[in-house]
Amino acid sequence: MKTFHQPFSIILVLVSALSFSEPVFCQPTLKESFQEKFLVGAALSRARITGWDSSENTLLEQQFNTITPGNSMKWERIHPQPGKYNFKVADQFVALGEKHDLHLVAHTLIWHNQTPRWVFLDSDGNLTTRDTLLMRMQNHIHTIMGRYKGEIQSWDVVNEAINDDGTMRKSLWFQIIGEDYIEKAFQFAHEADPDAELIYNDFSLTGRTKREGTVRLVQSLQSKGIRIDAIGMQGHYDITSPQLKELEASIVSFSELGVKVMITELDVSVLPWPDLPPGAEVSSRFKYRPELDPYQDGLPDSVQIKLAERYASLFRVFVKHSDKITRVTFWGVDDGTSWKNNFPVRGRTDYALLFDREYQPKPAFDAVIQTVHTE
Ligand code: GLA
Image (cartoon, rainbow, N blue to C red; front, side, top):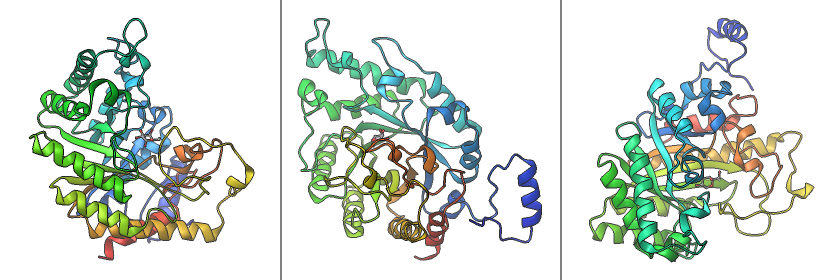
């Protein structure tokens, strides 16, 4: 794909060649294009945060103004054993953000996945008590948020607490503490850093029943005077799902609650979803079959165009509602490292992001940039 179309293109090509073929953009970047609308971000892997792979960091500086650690701040990574915290990568994440003056979003304090078993158990291996679990939750939140107070501006406080039918997920948090575990988590987070922006984050929030359940949850927190600033709508989408009218309905309903709306974890899969309706429940796994992996040798132009059109239609909705949306974060930077290559089937070749496996912008990138002019 051509990336150079300005008079300086020849000079840029030479400079680019001399500087180890790092991507050079003379077209508008994501962060510049949407500057007046919302922040544009990316989730970063541990390798990218710690600088093992610097190629994506060039894109990072050029394209994004906010970052989220993909895995490095999940409980199992940052607090693997009782009383033992591992802040190394999170510290590097903060340093990277400060170096490039980026808005930092931490992900995630309380979740049912990627949380070690010991959190929920007593010394005999039985489920622990409500009081002990609340104490562990409070220590965890206070320790981590306390360390990064004033440095990390936004926090995913609770991740994925609601089922598709709008009922509360019966996670171990729910079973042991009870329904008020969510309000406790938000209370502890607010105490730990009163200036932090506090987010409830979940997938499939475009479905009617899940949207209604989320509205009930937020209203219940608000009726108790508990601070919640935003709803993060995970955007693990594909070419046809969700419908744009469902997406808009959720953005509008959430914003009517008086909270900010954020599109988090955005990616658009081009691969067939096996059997069940698409979602992002990380425990869903399916066996590899070649027919589920049709684009191993490259993406046909026709599908590339469909992907670009789909991204454009999503961004037209985001731009239309940019008075409600404060941030759009992609779940990754380039196709090569996207989790969609391994979810919900391991070992496939997906094309879910705006940059290809050589970190070059795809037609979807241009299509997204164009939407800023189509209000
Ligand atoms: C969920 C979580 C993310 C991540 C993705 C898969 O959406 O919120 O942290 O695990 O699944 O990468």
